Length: 165
Length: 421
Image (cartoon, one colour):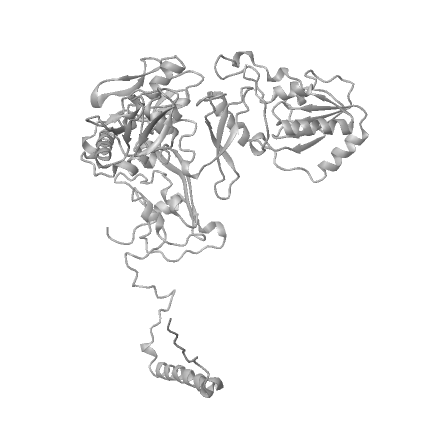
């Protein structure tokens, strides 16, 4: 076996003094500061929330929505595939007999706890019915209580898709 | 014992058994729908094809009796091709509605498709022959004719085992379907066993319908407490997130010495009482008040439930000696003449009466001379009059001076002695 001895970095006097490295770092910071103060318009800043982002694409995983069938009824059949795939365990489904005559099964409750959700998109991948999507483009949710962040079926059905099919 | 060779592996099997039995006993993978240990062979599903050396074509293992020196192949390109084609025929009119099917997760069609199928369907959804869906057959059984593979396990169960003959196969070819006889419903005390027998989602339980997906459930082996027979069961339970543990269903567990493969519907549905109206916590001073009552009493009666485990009863006998109490287990409340039958149901509706007999516990109502009754979950406590009562109870709604929570039989481990006669 061949052994190659590597000289450890940072043993030279210049390195052990620290001050040259600190000076070098501060120099970069100061250069940027002077440049930006001189030309404030060129700084890439989004003045959120007055200014909203314009670069959200259809691949962006925003808040979830439940989709509808052509006849307007809920597409979800409460198969629990999303809840099974969910790594955060944040999807709460209660299944019930379907009463609208479209199918046999539907969710009587379908809730997503967005505080637990990690927005991984596995639920969308797992859904066999294209019933759940994350294409709303909604990236912020505001509430004052924990319960406000648990999105129930009615809220999820009310969300609209932000992009063309 | 004779020797046969399966996939060049030597097996010693009893003479005269079916080849499929020998394969199942030796845990060799063999797909089948219609064969069942309790119902015997029928030979209609054709899934259990195996290659037998010396035979021109593949043969079904369920209609082949083992012969000494027989050489059998359960794998190989030819056998797998045959299986794939047979499975494709079984699935030709299947609606593939697994998302709404309660059988999904424990379905033989799903398992075999993943093991042997994996073909692209040659039939489009519009061309399929449709049948009736969600038909209420009675006795808590739902029928979906489209999902059926016509294995005839359910009809053989009602014909050969319960001998009630409610189910039959009507129609021919693609239009053959399971149905009840005109104007009749499925109704016998063992009807829900067809749900377990059905290898696919054609027969599902109305009671378990949409309650839970099966892959969330954990199964714990146990013994049914609905009567003295002691049928072996699996308790299927789960605690959904932020919720208490619940029991979702009982399933029969095979025990040839007691119940075979089946349980009665009353026992199967008895899980419900374990979920609701449970007493779960004690008052902080309950134990001290109970102690004070016991110390003040002169003549104590200790009432024990005949559903307690042997270990619990033995401990209560020791406890009774220590506090100088007399043991009682009034047994009339457990007797239900109409419940008994000649198969699995026994008129004594408590699981451990045999041990109550062995311990020699008085099986009549305690005399009125007692000034304190301590009850361990005995159902008769409320009908007895006494100066003071202490109740250890699994359920709410017990009136006593002190009530203490007790774990139910499903939450404890123990031994039971059944009455098979």
